[in-house]
Length: 172
Image (cartoon, rainbow, N blue to C red; front, top):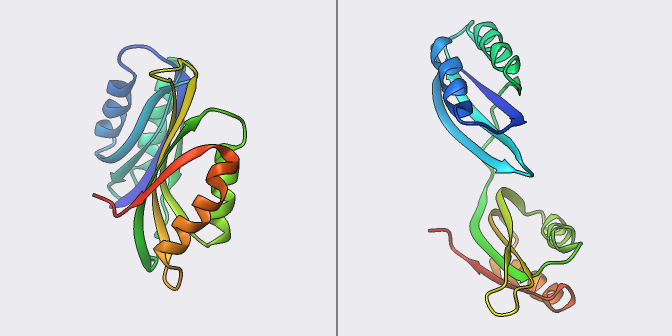
């Protein structure tokens, strides 16, 4: 078996996920993981698929048939990544939305050598003010040799400047 990643972008409509599932099934593949969402009015996402050896061309042909229906699908070979050593953390952030929050937070994390393994963000109306609130959750891998306290302290150091609240905890 070989692992591939499908990346998808297109106009949203009922049946797109089914069309992807049909293409995977037609190629003899097994749908392993996915992140699919409506983002900016578009259907976007990624799917990790396990395929029989030599079936990638069949999956690519099935994906091109979906392309004809208005969904751009790219098939990429997955790569083996060595397991990194470190401590997993969960980051939660909330604050009034403004440009630069993601840049500031990711700058701090990159400076500590922290790997962001999963990152979700959203904007919602504040319950009391009605002003837009920015929310983020992330799964972080803190490298061996960097304390989890150092991550919390570095984020706290910028929290006042970017006016957000952080919670750093062990993942559930």
